Length: 64
Image (tube, rainbow, N blue to C red; front, side):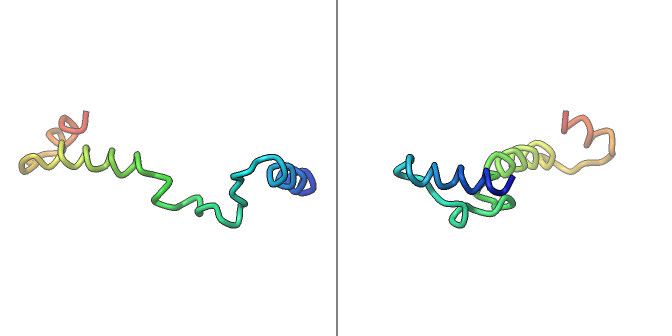
């Protein structure tokens, strides 16, 4: 399996002019790869914290 990955990388280096090798890829947990998550959390915060929450039911209602 590792041999096939190595061959694939070699092919990409030869055939793809702008290929970015794996050692330059960002880590999988990079915040740069999760922009949607940050946007969604911001929207959820805006919805939930419009005014003070007085009960769990109210919290659930705002989140739906």
